[in-house]
Length: 152
Image (cartoon, rainbow, N blue to C red; front, top):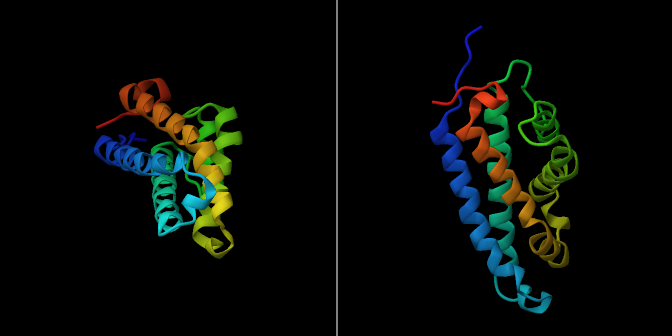
């Protein structure tokens, strides 16, 4: 069976989206809760976090589509399979990516339950996990053969 190469342009565009989203989110890391609750801060932060997480799982899905047997049907499965195929370390997949997948689903399906305290805590605590994911993917792009992949 012929290997389909990763589309480097697609992956780089998604990584750039994540970087832009994280830059926007970092503004909120230093805010206290009362400031975060003012104006449109909550809505804007929610928007950028959702976009970043969507890009994370778009990247994961794209990579897995190039691995025989790597197709996933859920976001948590994308996280698990990225660990299984060593695209990211297993521990990172199980402890970080699975949580990201769950929160991505919460942002999309249970958005009415999300409050300012929860979102601000995630922004203040968990953005380095998204940055870590980006570093793992940058390595996949620069050394695809290490992962049994091709890159165009």
